[in-house]
Image (cartoon, rainbow, N blue to C red):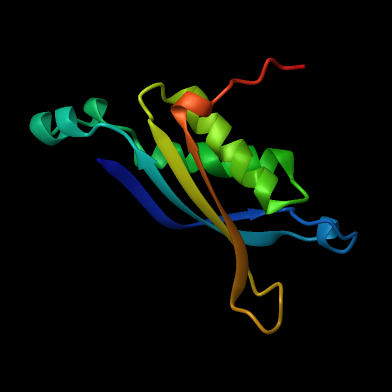
Length: 126
């Protein structure tokens, strides 16, 4: 399966459940694997035949920064929903979000979500 891979996308945002966390900006590190048919792009060598990596990064950062989520699980869902809504050709998304240096004994803590197009239900805005 073809995939676009983005590793180590740094997103500076307000994130966390504790009062002190809501007062500071913290980094999140995102890794994305986006399954999408890349056959046409591999043949044409044209940007319009693939997904724009910079745009994916911008969308991912923006939805997290605007939401200022408490949980990184929620941050991941926001990114998945935004990318499925923006790109109809995306078949599945795996996202890992790490919160570095939040636990003294660990380099980072994090979560991973994987969702498939067939399971995606756009928000109705309610």
